[in-house]
Length: 161
Image 1 (cartoon, rainbow, N blue to C red):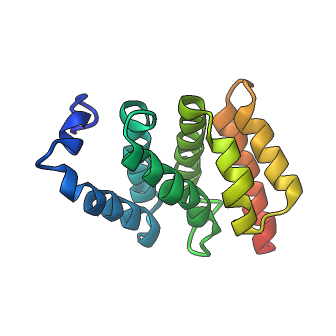
Image 2 (image 1 turned 180 degrees about the horizontal axis):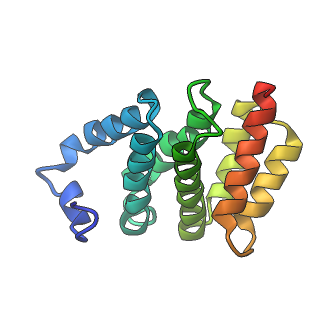
């Protein structure tokens, strides 16, 4: 409600700033530890709403988005509990893709972060990495949907199903 009503500055007010890390961690844990794709989608939606007001204006939140939420967009679909064929998971994957596209478009730092830090730690194949980055940085129509399709295919193949 705070983010929907454009009250985001409340989150970083002197009174609330000391609790922000705990709040963000709770949202992250909700998306990671609850296998309900609707919960995951809603949690990622909250993080997505933090991009515009904070990704370029608040270093603490920007760092959190890069270091905690970007990996989350790959950890969730990598989980064996994430049903890649479920309609709810389809929407959760789309929300993750929208998050990545919006973060990239807001900061232009996502590609560098993925190339230099995240993909090497993930150990994903170079072919997937280059396809993902090409889609992320392109201006093709329905970019989030194309990213979702790529991520789904990658994890489906990775799981051997």
